[in-house]
Image (cartoon, rainbow, N blue to C red; front, side, top):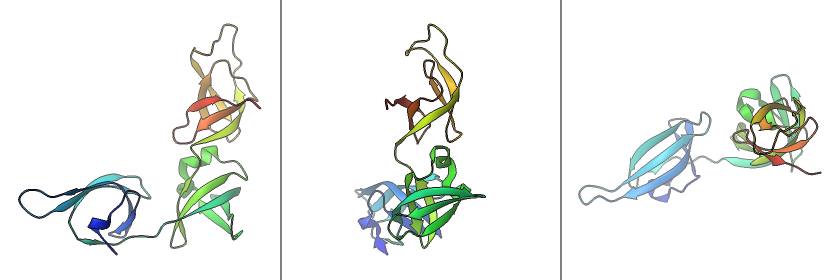
Amino acid sequence: MASTNDLKNGMTLDLDGELWNVVEFQHVKPGKGPAFVRTKLKAVLSGKVVDRTFNAGTKVETATVDKREMSYLYRDGDDYVFMDAESYDQLPIPAQTVGGTADYLLENMTATVAMHEGVALYVELPASVELIVSHTDPGLQGDRSTGGTKPATLETGAQIQVPLFLTTGEKVKVDTRDGRYLGRVNS
């Protein structure tokens, strides 16, 4: 239990049986009437963002979210199996929990798994990963680095847009948040 006066960005609240992260908050003391706290909350599971206002000093239920470093091992049916780096426990996580991060997951890759009461909430990858282009159409004479883009398939099966000069087998850096090509990796 915490008071609305104790809210901080990133804090996780348990409101009406659903987990919410505090994105931003503001204490407001109007000239007339009681003080209140205006918040912007993001649902942990669905990602929905809502604005909510609380009276100052109201008690809210906090939730403990444990973020652990885990290694991705393999896919087993609809589950992705991760191993805890400290205890070596293997944890199957359903595909809908892993979500779009599966497009950039390679075996033995380290990811952050958020847990609440033994249940995995979401999987977070580093901001960028290095992957090999498994297929892309060959470039043509005259293609330049400042030109257009073409589709490429990565070793994980994900599709991204890359510059025309890239060829199959090259290693590229990809933004895991939006799937954007960030650059070529020289090995």
